[in-house]
Length: 72
Ligand SMILES: [Zn+2]
Image (cartoon, rainbow, N blue to C red; front, side, top):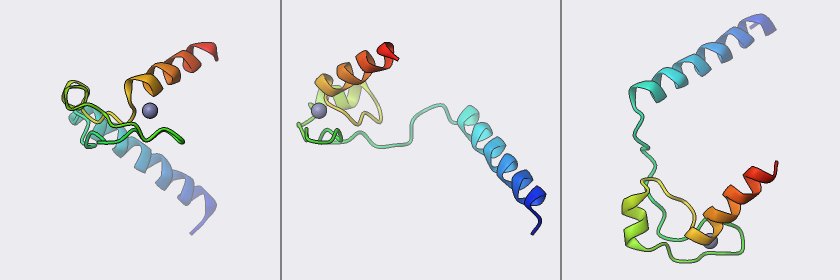
């Protein structure tokens, strides 16, 4: 396969992924029971898991992540 073809294929995959995301806006990822942040592992309350579908972090880590995002 030529490099040009490979690039085109990657572009197509990306396009397909975007289409999928547009069709399916709901997160398919399951809410985590435990915080995925390194060094945390805090239990994520049932309420939060229901309120935030696909949530991966506890409230504390989520807030820290958002804060760090604003800093950038
Ligand atoms: Zn956490």
